Image (cartoon, rainbow, N blue to C red; front, side, top):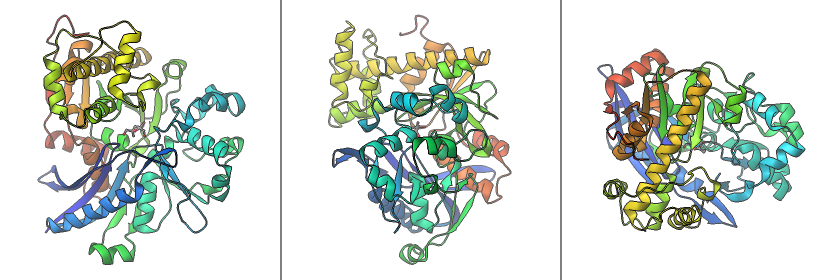
Length: 474
Ligand code: LFR
């Protein structure tokens, strides 16, 4: 039996349970369970199947045992901003509505006009303006369904809720809580003044606990059901927080955490809320060890995930890359961050419409659609990177692409070509690795974030890309 930590990492399109452990000073990772995650529609809202996901977590725990592991701890990370509310009997009051639901359309402006100015909100929270931030989701609930908020006794974000189901303990983990845009960036506590202004009862929010907190053991009924007894530890429960823990070098490097979203930024020891950061809409999300991720959300691979779904999964992600490589001469680009691509009826048609409206060539084949997506993403990355360099008055030499998207060698090459910087790709499982090392730090098996990053560098290979195409593709 191998002693391990279990990392549960759930993204917008899939989740996995990984067993991780140290061997000879290196981090070892083994996928014990993988499952799909998808958005469904219920009662007029786009929602996550939260009960189904918890079932998958349990299957993963059980599976780890069957594969010969003895888990000593488990940590859960997921995407950010989404939440559930519990009533006085700790029953769910709502489905977990996804941040891609249009219920918050137009509400940012209303909040700035009626509740708090945009500038003040940024200065207090350090968080970027995204229409899906929890603050706007709660505001929309207050408008559309005030009774639900009245009945609510507990606010838990998605990983907090899973932790509650595992342990019976209610808490709001810090890194994920920062993405609500309701936490003061300096006190690192719920901003009670802001909540009062919004008319939301601050009593529903739980204690904010940092990564490395031990929430305690599993509930007895789960120990009986799964035959496993272990502690539930808090990693950075926001997936991007865990992912960035896996970036080994951050002095001269800009990271791109590449998955459903592309999160492009640097790491700091304090939030940066200068005018340019505000103008360019950069965020300061809380990280492990109270470091801050200064980054920008760029659309990411959601577009190609949707394109794949629209083609009824006829092509794999690798197929799209191969097909796009054969479309060297096709060169139409879209603004990937346009709200129309957030949750369109049909992504392919939306891309085609955009190209028609902007009088560009309309992509017809799967290869042309994919090429358009990759070119458009690379162009947007280039702009975000230029903005970071402008804000920091510094040139960064390297870009480290981490996460599932780092397997896309065409996109990696495009980034090198368009930015003329060295691109390092990997680790692919950055988020799960960050989750595991944070547990190892909590358990005293790794010394801290500096050692963890060195260890990760020694444990996982990275591929390097340099500018090839002098013309640039875009
Ligand atoms: C990435 C991510 C981003 C967040 C977005 C929505 O998976 O967590 O960091 O902005 O999803 O929650």
